[in-house]
Image 1 (tube, rainbow, N blue to C red):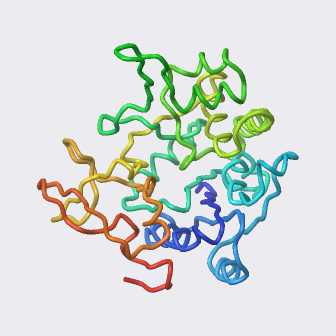
Image 2 (image 1 turned 135 degrees about the vertical axis):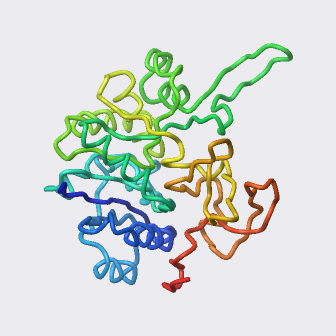
Length: 305
């Protein structure tokens, strides 16, 4: 059996959701034998005390290279983004590393299994910011009836970090998401991903460096990757409907496949306070008040629900 390490990282603000994410995985019998690791990017002593009882490894990373203070002051939490390509260095000795952002949680195991299957084939398993249910990811600035500027995540960030030619080459592709991925510990991707991140940080934004670099690694340098269906890792800024009968979130369109990992993107207040209710669509076409936070455990109080 492969030695799997589930990784995440955060500061104190996201710690309740980190607890929920860990609980959401551990409840599955398939996770028996998995180990857990956390990047500490601004946790409190109390947070660390809980982690020492509940995960296998904790590491407080440094910035991967010297950066000007104006880029990093008050943004220590971004270490959990840009340091992802070093997971196999921080926590050596595992066959497969699977990263989940702390504001994600596992509803169904099927998607986790696909992430691990892709990694077992020597590829980096990812999902894309594209799906039949997602709107277009390109922003257009119009001059009357004429599209004056086309902008997207890759073009804007690659132009700043690597120049116009790289931005033009990357522009046609949809974004590969670094919020959840899986990769073998011995894959060649790690060292090259690290190099591209270091280059991106010289001129580009800290916030986007690892996801931008992932796109360059896969699309422009042809490191093998496996793009999984969006239901494996769903961006909740595009709210999925709730199947009220089965009490699970599903794809909006037929066959309404159950979503495996829900990523609570686009809901900053709900990330801070799980008591907040939002309007949820249902499979029957109704609107109800509810939440997309993990329902079985309150990470703010430590209570089972």
